[in-house]
Length: 121
Image (cartoon, rainbow, N blue to C red; front, side):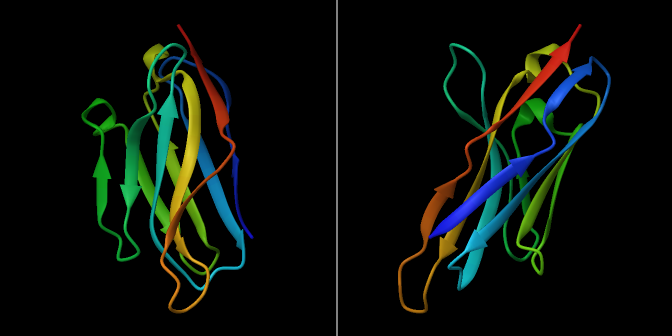
């Protein structure tokens, strides 16, 4: 069984910063891409940022220049550093990871339960 556990959400004023963490645990042979998605009230879930196991990153246009993503492969953890936060960044942020549990078994996407980020104006 694989688990993704997020932490670091909370309430912050516009212009402030937050750092989200997501740690993977359980039966893990290898982790491919890891990333963050978010879902605001009444909106669809959208990709925020992703990072491959080789360190290549991808960002939504709305967060480019403000958010950075990084990972510690030894700790099986992905981070999202969010700077210059705006009220429109308010959402539940979900961690996603493509994980192979055993050698020879196809990799599967796993999701965390989400952490709430609220940015006040």
